[in-house]
Length: 453
Image 1 (cartoon, rainbow, N blue to C red):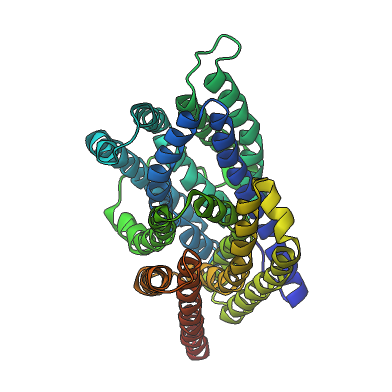
Image 2 (image 1 turned 120 degrees about the horizontal axis):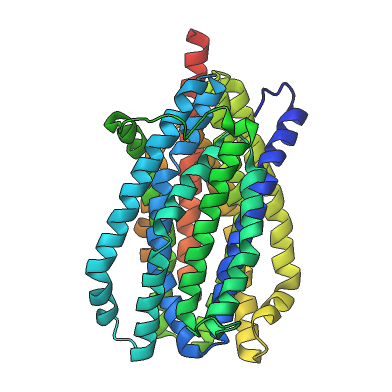
């Protein structure tokens, strides 16, 4: 990261941060896609078991990783303020916290996993695959969260190409071990869907070890000497991390869990409707990685400028990021409108599912614009370390407006399953409007501080 003087320099630097983050996000999506498709080739019950296990794990991971995401604005602001000596202390404290969180997750899983799966009334094999998949995955939880801390550190310094490199090299490793362990190739045991859990855990260990090597050997990171000095546990540092991270974690949890809830509520509709919904949502989730990556880039850029007390530059980055997201939303919306039938054919050849998927993709157009405003603003606000507004916006938008409205429209009007999407779109739009005014308020506050300074 470096100071920029013109809009052109800011755009170049923002793109420099954004593009590797976006490629990283797509790489992670590809890993999940490989897990699902490869276990599906083992058997439908293996696929169902992996899907159930993944649906339980993803909200837990996204919520806890949201807590650790607090490190990004902390390091970015230290970097902008040239408080380099405080960065390694913050990173090591985050690693301590990550280790404790990982052990807590494993302990809770050991206690609650069996009762939760029993309560779901699953087929015996599906339940067995889901249980052992999650048990296998647990082997990699500690390195995963430790890696996530190092990733936040690396990204906060603006070196997002490094995390892109880690993800792109991890993808073939994940696919290789999926192949070996799911199908029992080259002398490895044939584990079916459970093999996906072990392959994922191995991938997590790989990411962690490569990240450690990078921060030790590359000069731009080695200067911070992360692992050459012992830092005692600091509850004050944990308090700062949790104060920022817990609202982020809950905001992300509210977002991911609402889609899981809608998926469960959709079970009352026909198999054709559910298949079409899942197909459209899968593609919409892929497109969402664009504003999500811009959001991450803004957290880094805005945090850097706020730390340096360059509040006007932070403001300019915020609007550049929103403008980029809206511009890409126009392009993706046109893509969805004109090629929705072709996109639907990626997922199915059944005429009924094709037609319904194409209809769902029309509604996904409205997601593009709401996400294009809401996601970048969330990233900018995190750069200012303002996270409570995002927490409340997510809660009210999804659970206070989106789900109740969607349920009402789906069950008491002729809209049917489309009602859920209209509800979610309405909630997300309301949240985006609220966050926009919150960003204006924060920028005015920092503008006044700048004038007083």
